[in-house]
Image (cartoon, rainbow, N blue to C red; front, side, top):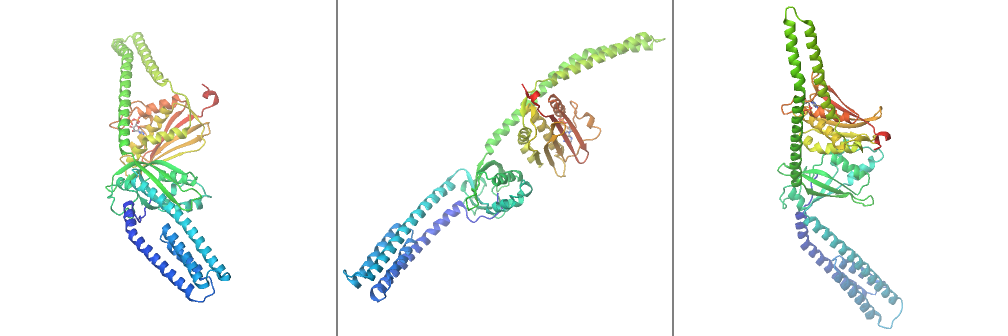
Length: 523
Ligand code: ADP
């Protein structure tokens, strides 16, 4: 999620650490040599000069120098050696029976050396534990088959803290805030996912391990701002060869009390799972299409069968009427009868069609209490990828706290999916920006309005009246049943579906649904 150059890579880091080792050994030798030289100097000053001070206290510096080696035995040896030298110098200078201020000074020196040795040993133990833990985590980082990216979000944290009082979503500023993150490390599994040679330098300037959409990034930021410990979502990884790999990611945020702003992003390649899912969706869509075609086939056959009879009667009566009319003189009584029969048969045909339509409309709907925000989100998830592949920028905005509605979740989802897919198809060929907005608002009449608004070519005025009719389509591959079914579904839910369009600018479909009242919500 960052644009910045990364200083070191996993393997790069490992080899850099390897190079550190001889340098560390050289440093250790230098410190120990310095400690030895200092020991000799202090001993000489302590024994050969008549200085009346606790010169041996300076052995503390020797212990501290030895501690720089990071080894327990060096600290113990330095402490034991310098204590022995302190005693030796004391005995050499004052003998064994002398008691007085030099004795006190010797004790002070011994105590100082002892205490600094204990402190140095404690610090060495803590450092060793820390190093072991760091090396354990480093091994996990390097050996994990899950991609891991380590990023520094200190500046993001400062930015969010500053913005805290103002509140609001980060969506408008996602791109800018993303520029504040800095990639610190990437493990070999992540490098492999990026399609990079693991031995190559980690990330070039401008490269981003994860290409989350602005929406995903803004949601991640919102979770961070809310103080949540982690956030999970879907995103993509842009490989070096330009292809994109769909991934599942989990990002862990630093806790408020942590001083550093390090976040860890765990990334899992889900390309194979996605392919299987796509194949399943395709199979389902084909099945649904086949089922619908079969139903339509049956329906048209039964319409044809039932309507054929009155139609034949209309034709026969019409021909008879014409014959009575062409007589000389015309027999208007018979003509009257023929026309009356035509009208009656026409009405009958109309009733048959109405009966079939009401049968289709009355298909039982599931009646569950539904939260619009949820089924809108679910519908969006179903088409999000298709729209993103068609380069349609999607903006979803459902007002919080909308009243619940009563109905069939799948059917209502299907209405939204249909409207969104139609919009995507309508905008597919245009160069103008392709934008799709799905919004949900409360309606004064006690319901909710879900709008699907696009920036497509709009609908010609002469097509508008027929738009919701079955089989009306302007697309070569179209079937013309989508909007007809959408409207039927809306009406079966006690709502309605309307359209408003400005040719050349776009189209807005509005689905109005009544709020669930207690009375109708009761089973
Ligand atoms: P189909 O998609 O199979 O054609 P529909 O009933 O879903 O059937 O749509 C009917 C027609 O309505 C489409 O062929 C298209 O001309 C028009 N239409 C639907 N949605 C839009 C839209 N968002 N913008 C422009 N035209 C649209």
